[in-house]
Length: 428
Image 1 (cartoon, rainbow, N blue to C red):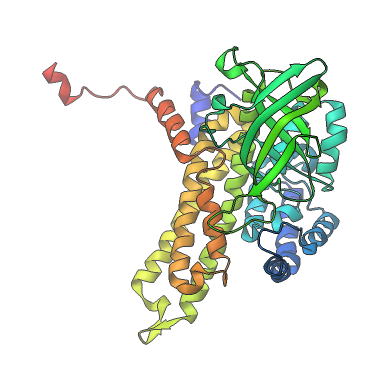
Image 2: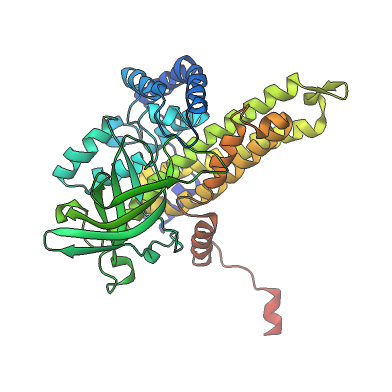
């Protein structure tokens, strides 16, 4: 593909020719639709009943989760997020990931396509040694264990990875790790067997070469997985934990990649992770819109269905426009990932990471409004969907970080045309 600065490259950016999906991709999509109808949606009641009957803060895995994983694998719906495993491009995966977002707590994990494991598997696939892949990647790909990514810290703005304070100090053939992490998603799940820990190995090195990533089994002495933090009062099954690391010792062979390569590895991990979150978010928005449409047709107020109110119809129309706009941006970003790689797609991924949760939250909020009290309770999934997607504007980089990056890129962009002389020039 020509460089973006060439006329051909510019043309392809303005008129992207998306390749048609393969027959295999279409078959996976059809299989996913059937799986959602026949297995996932009917299983939601059992999942919610199990979580409701468990003690507050209990993170036991509802049996239906493992049952769905078996059924998904039998249908060939397994590890679809990873091109080397599935044969799908990111653009082909996007509509399938969107379908999984309709049932956020069940479908992604049923396919073994759930965060944070997907990002960790991507890292292990890209830069893990043969031993690391055999020990950790293979069980993750097989859905036998789960993992967590330990980067965020309570004392610093962790959206800037150079702020990380956790120390990773070499002592002979071992690394000694000390630090406190929080919002470590997945760490409360009893199947979580390994952490990928981000910390500083050389505080005196160049800013972006101070950090490294180390593989830490959760049963290592000194690893203390503490309370799980709720999101808007709701405890997710997999948990978002505070993790204390005190004189944790692991072999130097547990370094992921190279010393000083942690910042670059984090960026490589977050790119696919962000776009996958965006894909799934679209499914949540579509479910909220479908619920809104159903509700306004059955609910009567002031003598007529809500659907007859012009203001309600406008809200539905606005929701459709916003979701379709958001999907177009998501798919364009996925296409550029496929065609030019994560680095070239980084600004599109950042734009999608901002725009899609905003659009989805707007749709969910409208759906909550027409559902009234049921919308803000646990009688519908809307409050859970709202909480998760509001949090999405913070995790994997808050909106402000992406907007700053996008703004800087735009300020450095060369306009296509030389602008006519400004009126302000006459005052020079």
